[in-house]
Image (cartoon, rainbow, N blue to C red; front, side):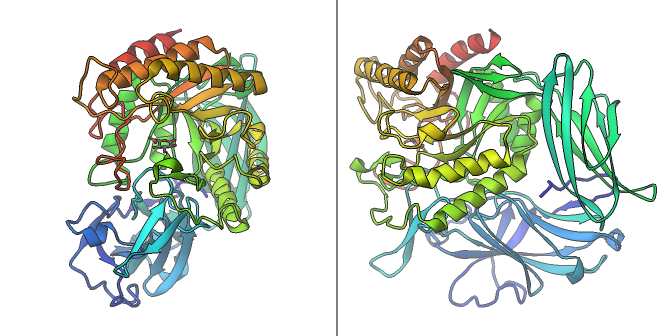
Length: 593
Ligand code: GCB
């Protein structure tokens, strides 16, 4: 499914703004059938949880409803009309007047419906979107709805971020020609000084395909015809980390000499490869610096916000981060486009987080936490189906982004237990089948060291989350350093694959200080990261370091989280803690070399 765009043949209307909003309760029967009876309005995009001073809304389990009227532009008489929802977390249904037009599961990926036959150019219709925030043992991510003493329902889950819900990204009304470009796939290669751009176009309807590749000045540097082919660009500008260059592949569907559809795709010419213990971009060893992030800000929760997008990337640049991981779900397409444009490297992760009944709220089960101990259906065929769908939809959405250098199919799943290898093997195969050009990985949990993990053998790159000096050896940095080095050497010896530390960090209260090795202080966070860096510098196959986390973020409540997770190097409102300055000194040195 192509991202909606305005082109010579396509128009687009953002439906963002204030919508009528209601929480589903017994009184609300068919909320789509009539104007929503409610006093509330909610902004799109935003999570609804933190908007209202109402605990019931914040903790609501189940459906909520968004509604507005939409007028179809009068000029769209001869066009197909689509509604596109960039994200409905975690399940969405769309009604045009009283007709159901789309249903979708998976809270972080888009879906659309062709509503041409139900609407009239120039006229209004009622658009109602239902969003269900429930997670079950079969969903990705998984969770369990439990019934409290008073009979009300509560959502529990194993992952360590708040279960924000709602319409987190833009809702679009889009026009599309009847005969149109349905999909475009681009794969690039480098042949000496020449850039190679292989493309494939899927059309809906009969037409000829014409493509031309424009450089950043809009000059055509190559062109050809046909639904699939290869373009060669002499003296190509490569897409490089920190120095992006984007060509535009303009695809045209031509019928009887008339361009009936036009669709452009940004193309960064670059290669990605794993070679022994090295990770190569354009044939050169690449060392990842950066973070695991979250889509998370005060009040709007997981709602996409372009101001934070720009500011976060400014901070990444300032601190010397050349990469991030979309922990723990696919991010808004605006983020991916921005990373393409600004040369930031992305490890693109599915929403498969918390597939681990030995973890509660991100923490090993020994601490109690919110973990669901009866997660008996975990790793069943239903979950595997959902997991496959997440991989398919993620790769379909993001396959053309040069910033994406690797797929991460899960974060910290149980890979210790019997059967987890048979669960994961087909998922790796699927990802490789869908995209043979990028390495595929998953993120390994501390409970599954090299001799225990049953799944690392399938990964092209070892991505490890480690908390020596925090959950283990807390406050004892000397022992943490020894344990960390011992484990990394174990991985190196057993696999020899490139390794990235995809999480390491310490909860830190901004403004809390000590001259001692005192967990939660700014000094301790900086010192602990230093310990890791010393070890990384001694281990040859370490090809990356992504601190947990870019910024403080909200989690479910519990005695182990004080207003959320405080492992941010920046506060939730993006103020630097002391560690930010230390990281900046190290990373600017690394990326300049
Ligand atoms: C992890 C998880 C991450 C948590 C983090 C923590 O291993 O991957 O989601 O937030 O630990 O801070 O505990």
